[in-house]
Image 1 (cartoon, helix red, strand yellow):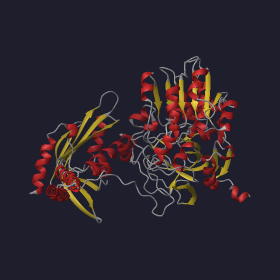
Image 2 (spheres, each protein chain N blue to C red):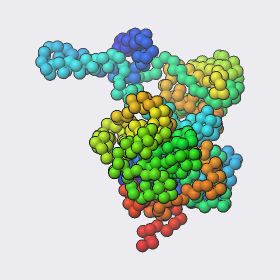
Image 3 (tube, each protein chain N blue to C red):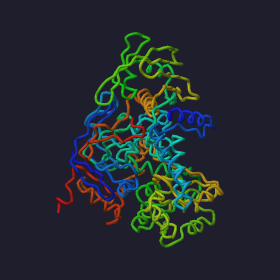
Image 4 (cartoon, rainbow over the protein chains, first blue to last red):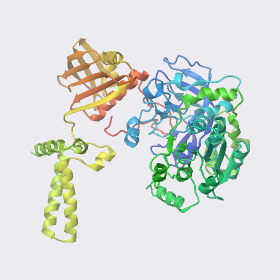
Length: 398
Length: 233
C-alpha cells in the first residue's frame, strides 16, 4: 500500500510499504477513505517530538471501511464504515472504565519508555512517535486498529465521510477544552489559537453556554473564520497587548476561562518569545509556552486554564506565582475521544454542528508532502487539509 | 576480593535511608577498574601539587567514588546496568479484576509462558511442579524446574526453583473498585524482567492480549524494530 512516512524534520514522503496485518486477536484492518493532517502532526513534522524513527507512518485522524477483523472482535463487522479515535484504548482497565481512554494502561507497547519520561504512560496513539507506542498511523491506504470493538465507531449512512472525520480528534478536543472550562452563565471564554481545535473550542464554548467568546491569533484568515463562523470577538496579538485587551474587554475582571489551543510551538511578539526560540533551538527547553504564559496572566482570579494544545517536555519561565496567587484551575491532557464521540455524532446528525467548515484543502494522499509544507507555512490560507487515498494527485492533474 | 569489598560497601549503602538507597548498576570488574584508575590519579595528583594536579585529583576522586559506590548517574539516566542481579526484586501492579480471576489466570501454566520474558513453554507434569523451558542466547533452550511450596488461592503462590530463580506471587484485594494488587518477588532476577512480567500479566487479564506493533508496516527496510528498552527486555 501507499503510506505517508516520516524521515526527519520537514521530510515526509509517500512510500510503498507492506499492507498491515492482524497482529492481535482484537485487531481490525480499516481501508482508509479520508484522513487529515492535524496541527499536532506539525510538531512531528518540525521534529519536536522525540522517539520518531525514519519510516514511521504518520496520521491519527482517519476514517474508513472495515475490511478484516480478528477472532476476538465481536461488535464490529467487515464492510462497516467507521471513525477511529486517535488514542488506542483497551476498554477494560481502571482508566477506560472511568472514560479516561487517553490514559489507557494497556495500549502502549513502549510504556516503559513513557514511564521513564513521564512517570506513568498514557495510551498508545496512532502515528505519534515510539514514546506513544510506535503504532503505524492512518495517513495510508490501510491501517491496523487494535481493540477494534472499543476503537472503531460505526457511522450512519446519512453522514458524509468529511462530516464524521473530525470526530477522531479535533472536534472532541475542542469540545473537551470547552467542557474543562466549566462554563457558567455570563462567562467570557478566551481562546488562544484559531487553528481547527481553536475553531471547534469556540463553537463548543457557545454550545456550553458562554456569554462571550474572544479568539486570539495573528493569521487574518483564521481570525476571520473565528469571527464569521465562530461569531467570536477577535484579537490580533501582533496589534494589541493581549492581556491588556482582555482586561479591558471584561471591564477589569479578566476572562473566566482561558483555552490554550496552541501548545508547544507558540509564536509571539516579545523578547520572551525570542528567548523561547533560542532555548528550544539549543535544546535547553523543549516547548515554547508563549500562549500558555499569556493565558495564565490574563485569566481572572479563580478561573480555569484549559490546555488542549500539545506539550511534550519542559517549559521555562512559567508564571506559576501568578497561577498560585490567583487560585487558577488547570485542566489538560490528550482528549478522551471515546467519551465524546457518540454525543458529538448525535449533534452532527441533528445539524447542530457541521465540522466541515474548517476544511480549506482537499487533496490526494499522494499530495501529502506538499500538503504538510502548505499547512506548516500557512500558505494559501491553509487551515485544514483532508487527504483521500483514492483521489487523483494534484501533480497528475496538472 | 574486590567483589567482597564492594558487597560490604553496598551493604553499608543499603542501611542509609530509603530515599538515598540505590542498587549498584556497574559490574564488579568495571567497578574495580574505575576505583583503580581513580586511585592512581589521586596519588599522582597528590605528588604534583599544581593546578593540573588539583584537576586530576578531582577527576580521580570522582572515579574512585564511582567505582566504590558501584553506581553511575550516567548509567542510571540512560538505563544501563552492567551489574549482575543480586537479592530479591519485588514489584507490584494493580489489575482491574477480582482476585479469584487473577489467581486463576496465574495458576494456569499456559498463561505463565505468555507472561514471563524468554519463556517458551511451561508444562505441569505434577500439580506441585512446573517445568519451564527458557530460550537462551543463540537459539538454545534450557529447562528448569519449579516446585510449588505454597499455594493459597487468591493469596499466595510461592515456588522454589531447583536450577532457576525462586519467588512468589501475592494477591490482595485493592481498595474501592480497583480490583487486585498483585506483587511478584523473584530472587536474582533483573528488575526489568519482573516489571515486564507484571505488565504482560495485567494486559492479558484486563485486555486479553499484550499490546504490540511487531510486524506492522513502515517505510524502512528492517520493517519494524521495537523501541530499545532500558534493561534490554
